[in-house]
Length: 343
Ligand SMILES: [Mn+2]
Image 1 (cartoon, protein in one colour):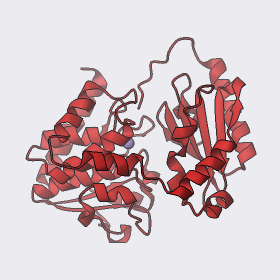
Image 2 (cartoon, rainbow, N blue to C red):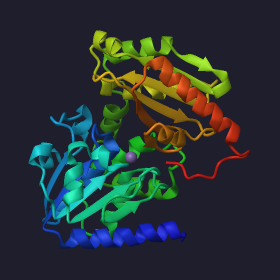
Image 3 (cartoon, protein in one colour):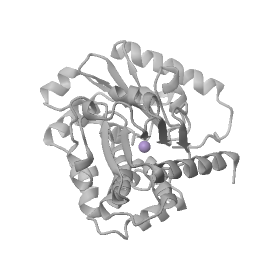
Image 4 (cartoon, rainbow, N blue to C red):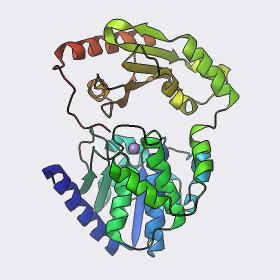
């Protein structure tokens, strides 16, 4: 066992003890949650509720918009608006949240909590909270929650199993990405022993696009630009593009998954204008570039192969700065494959 693994195990023990002793637990995940964030939160909440704990779940967007795929999960009854979240929780768990600001309106609640348990797998997480379960080698926060639940003990409810499976499925790209380990697959196999409709879940999570979305995808694909010297392929969408097609900015998040299949590029970038005018920059790498470091340099975060940040300058300036950063990275990178843990 490496030193890092021992630290994670010790934090798991402490968290399991605090949760076992708690009567009430408040859980939160990052704003604009993805299935790993929501699944890890509702999965842990479902298990704690089955242990007789009072649980309450939220995230820091006001109002709380329930994603369509929440229907393949369980535990929607635990969700409350952030304003109804305990002001000073005795025990608060923050899930899949790479930094306090990713809690949005609930960052103060985590700061005030007597016990603030943070469970996450983002390498860029600075390690906030009083108990930090941070394992950048874990495929997903759901995998970490699965291990924590084993530690807590007791029967895992079927609905909680479905929640955790959803997060494993999406954060591993259907068990494709490099962080998928035998442990990940053992967790998935164990979760699949519970009765839930995994085929419908896959459909809801990966094959549920509106025609409007497909039309926006066509616009983005038409604009793909190749920058060979930076190993980059990039595209962009403005608010006008999204409004014209009546697509919500959050709906177009997966569009980069199509662009990143470009054979000619190692790095893919999607610049998407938000309602407030700023630009959300999403980055993906096939392995030769560390986009996590690039995103961190621009005030964002993420993993070595998937990361993002927000830019306040226009599309043209944003891409020029990114190209400069990528080119600098290519010059300074040592030869050979990097040894950084993926995520
Ligand atoms: Mn995650």
